Image 1 (cartoon, helix red, strand yellow):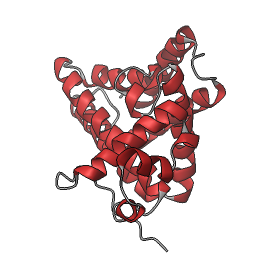
Image 2 (tube, one colour):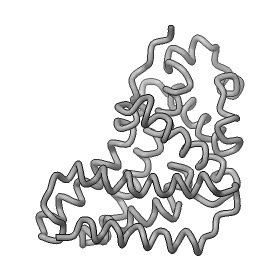
Image 3 (cartoon, helix red, strand yellow):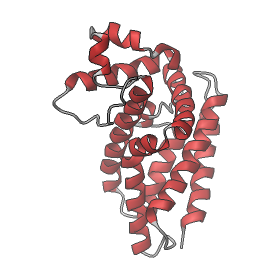
Length: 218
């Protein structure tokens, strides 16, 4: 039985691990979950099977690492973007809207853009998100933690400013993220790749934000 490796995509001393994750991300975008196989990874990297299993316990570990890698990128992207926005509610709106619209970085983070390849990736990652939430909830939460922490920080700032109702920021952040991500996953799973209705997606983004705003305001 293989032993699951700890999720840590920031291992600077193991560029091969990062290469595997980036190749896996590309395979998901190109062919969806069906294209993400260990055999394909080995062919693209030239690694021996043993070298793969020294870094990952299996395909689930690799998918979790892709989640962690892309969510970290998304959190970094948003942290930079919100520096130009003063109000914490406006900052949170920026994040919620980007997730719902599938705009950068989520066209490469959770695959939420409307493009053909990204559509396949989005549907695949949506299915995996829902499956891993049941089978490996702690690891999935760890992978999502950078974005959840960023949302919680914005909510805490909103509470300090008196614009967000006082409660546990981490709990409220999880509720906001789960609402938005689950709604977007449902949309992706009903769309064919390349067929996303951007007007519908924009309306959904507005409705999601308004729902979130009313749920969190003081």
